[in-house]
Amino acid sequence: MELRQLRYFVAVAEELSFSRAAVRLRIAVPSLSQQIRALERDLKVQLFNRDNRSTELTADGAALLPNIRMLVNTADQLSRCAAGLAHSQPVRIGYVNWYPADLGQQAATVAEVRVDTWILPSHLQTTRVAEGNLDLAICWVETGDLIMNRLEADLVGVDTLYAVSTGLDGSPVKASDTLVLIDSDTDAWSSWNRYAEHYARQTGALAVHVNSGVVGPSFYQHVRGAGRPVLNNPKTQNDPLPYGLIRRSIINPTPLWTWSLVHRRSETRPAVYSAIREFVRGVIQGVTAPSLDDNEFWVPPTDPHRRANASVQPDRD
Image (cartoon, rainbow, N blue to C red; front, top):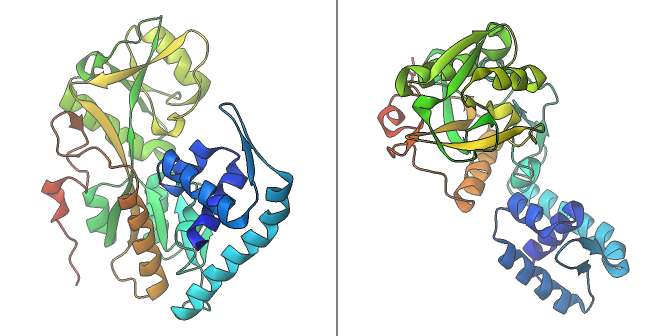
């Protein structure tokens, strides 16, 4: 029996889905199933009832869950003590709308992570890190943001954006044949507007300025009247579409939205750097993201994770 198998059991028990737990743990579903079966053999009990449609805890699994969860938490606490980090201040992390499902657990062995409940746009979360109100933030940034605020960024996520269209045609659409909305509310949509302006300028997509409507019902109303597919916003990346609308992939090129883990260049706390290391390690062990420098894909020229920008560093003075 291994500690990681106990972690896997807790994840599946909380998700009641091997596929969701595999995404959370950043491993393949077959590997996860294999480890759970090995744990069941070691414990000599069946932990889950599972078929092609559902996963449920058995009575034995439900009885063991509280104790196994306590063991995992105790092991994490022991690791923090061994690293001399148990009594440090919590690492405060903010986000916009996306973060890994197991965000706190990724760094649990090296730091106490506190996910901030104040969800704000990317440019405001970046400012909060620069001003010391957060230690880390998962957000969208440009190279200029990092230079101006003396920040650093690690790539922790990539969304492949798509277009939303009316009708039944779900075939891929060229980027130049899409439309992108730019919102007049710059306080809420500053980052999206900058991304959209780059996208329209570089791909030939049509940019349309609106008073409101880059997400939600207003967005879908714009789609119905646009006459061409409309680029989706990452805030609604995984939302189901209303009846009569269809998702279409974008090609030539495919737009990508990057999520950065941002921190201060002047940061000195070991717990913060330990948390960063664990977050980034989790990404490396997960699904490989598309190459941001591949001509098949598009990111703004100001994206800090393009090789051309990776060497641009803020002054340390």
